[in-house]
Image 1 (cartoon, rainbow, N blue to C red):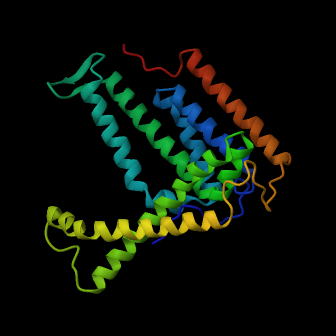
Image 2: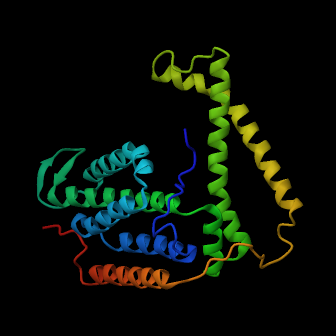
Image 3: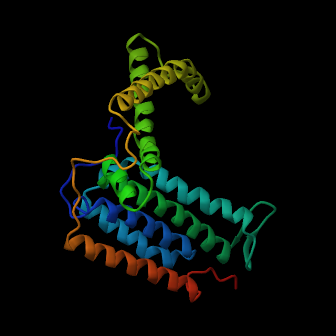
Length: 261
């Protein structure tokens, strides 16, 4: 089972400068933030589908397909409970189903799904060291950028430790899948301590390796990898800037809002 999302392909997006890819992550978050209407969010969703096809990132999206479906469904359902505006089609003490609540809930679900899709697409096309270089190029202090990107290393580290412990216990005859749902959850409790101990041991080894390599001695560390900016990076930067401006104008002109009537 792969625990990292990065896919080593040779698409145009993979070859973009890390700074442009970090800027693309910001622009996608920016664009999604300003609008609420599902029709305004639809072009961004189609753009992400096209980018997933271009970059060959479909395996990662397929692995997370149920998370996308449940995120949209339960977000839409939740806003039918809390967003009680507009002429009601169904109105009970719990559910207020109206065109406004349905569109608002669906829009919120699409917003969260698109934020998740943007993150998956970014991690599918960007290495951790490229993420660090992109943040540093944008002016983020190296230690701050390293701390941010370190989380992308530690999460797979914990997952790897959990899988190792579960496989080891399964080989010793411990049955994780016996019984009902609650019984299965209880069976995973005894592996929590060895999982955390193993992950902390690996994290401590990583800290010692960083100290041995002189981490923190220089405020502006050098790198043997150079990321030049070429024509495709400039074109991508201009297109992303235009996308961000367009979605801010959609918000400013009121086209991205939900009508209550």
